Image 1: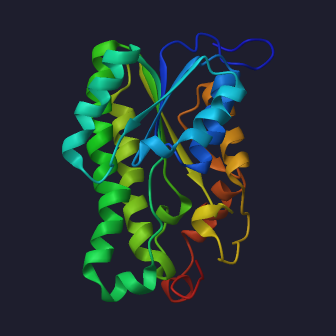
Image 2: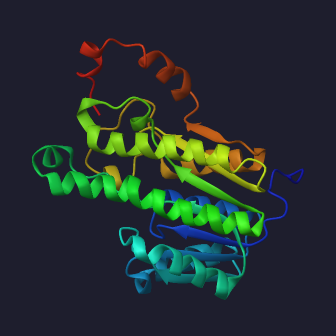
Length: 257
């Protein structure tokens, strides 16, 4: 439910950010703290170096900001990390699955190991941790998952097909998982941003309908408040891609990133 001022009511449970350095994840966490999330856990590699991120969320109003070591690529660590967070901080309220890499498309076309690394982080690792999270939250009977897909996965382009294919897989998996969670008390929000101007895309020419991490976070927070199941950022991308799906392949393959 939502307060009259637009804040989420009943922000119970720990807010867990998987990818504790993520620009979007941190911006969204700030908004959820403003909505009442008191305990935040930032999970990332080199977790001892997250002092700046901890201070940012403390300034936003969080009562407790903890950090935990988390290597998304190490599938064997996922469940132990989640169990440790619950043991120390209690039930999970909202989990932001905010880790990922863009990779280098040109390198990936010649370096199979790099192509696999991108797909492992952006798809395989996400499938692994989301499966553990779904099981854990089902047992709780409550909780919210936020999954960041991308319009790059709606119709995969030649210019970034390695990253796009991973996001296409993630989008399909998350959509199916959301349906599987129906009636369990657990909700999944699937976020489909366009080009995001930030650290990950530094040095790249922004695409049309670009957004910032703050804009993605604001749209995501609003979708959570409304109980939505998916959100496109910006919203205009939904009708745009409905049309782009119809473009002939000869035209599509020449489109830039």
